[in-house]
Length: 341
Ligand code: COA
Image 1 (cartoon, rainbow, N blue to C red):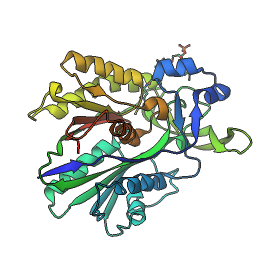
Image 2 (cartoon, protein in one colour; image 1 turned 120 degrees about the vertical axis):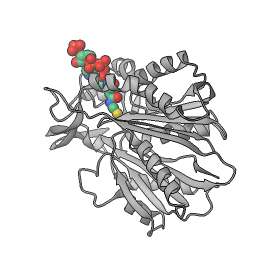
Image 3 (cartoon, rainbow, N blue to C red; image 1 turned 90 degrees about the vertical axis):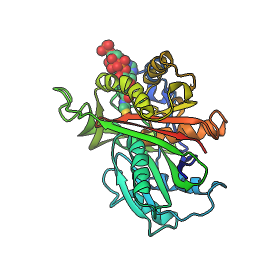
Image 4 (spheres, helix red, strand yellow; image 1 turned 135 degrees about the vertical axis):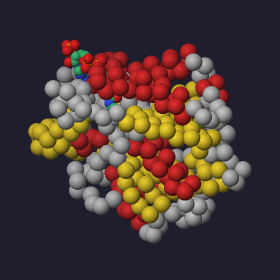
């Protein structure tokens, strides 16, 4: 018997922020953004909070034909924020109610963009330790546009909103999840970024709100916004993607040649391409799938948003050996190795 990781259910908002829109509000160009990050557009949630998007992703997942018994024992919700602290207490508790599982164990986890990888490991370990846990739902949901300052051209082109969910379930004759690894490295910041190379700063910034007459209206608001030392984050990210992939294969019967697909956190195509080159030199022959060009960095939701598309396009399929790998603020990193269902 194994503990499987289901195919994902996802929710992505309808409204799109294109690079050409950003060209109108900051000093940038479509060409620069694509060259430096690979991102062409990202989604913005104008009316749904993190927990609502997470619930919609969870419902989509549970509606899949493969999932019949809908009783969920535990829910772990990975996210970076509680919508400017307006939402209390846990997102997971809200999801439990929305999916008619009010008695599920429910808690949230915050580990930057690696949050969902951490949540999968936590859910798996809990199920191994407690045989009465039959099904666990993990959700990653983000509204990063809510904490993005659209006057800060150094990072506002990167982030987008969305949610994704997976189910962990005990199933006979399935290999399921094989290994999980996570790690951290304290982000102690620097002179210019005293609270961390990727952190929040309370300041006056530009927010986007919906406007029926124009694409989006811009308002000035004092609140917490993301600030980032892009170069330092980049330096952390490049080697850690390769490290995560190698680490999750350690002490298993598999090596890089056996891996069919890697689903990396979609932060920047240059980080992914760099990891790809190094892994291919070490024997990796599979595919690395991302759709960050359409969604930007959706943090904890980026892996399921990419996996959903890859499954639907049959780029990844049942019995493929897959690695999810991510890095994030904190700093954090992690990977899951599993056999697809
Ligand atoms: N449009 C046009 N020019 C811009 C710009 C923008 N949006 N933002 C910055 N620039 C300018 C800079 O001012 C700089 O100009 P200068 O050389 O005259 O000083 C130049 O472009 C290069 O900027 P730099 O910051 O060195 O670019 P970069 O190659 O480091 O790319 C990032 C910037 C943000 C794309 C990159 O650092 C990155 O992706 N970092 C990791 C981010 C990440 O993954 N975060 C999420 C973690 S989960």
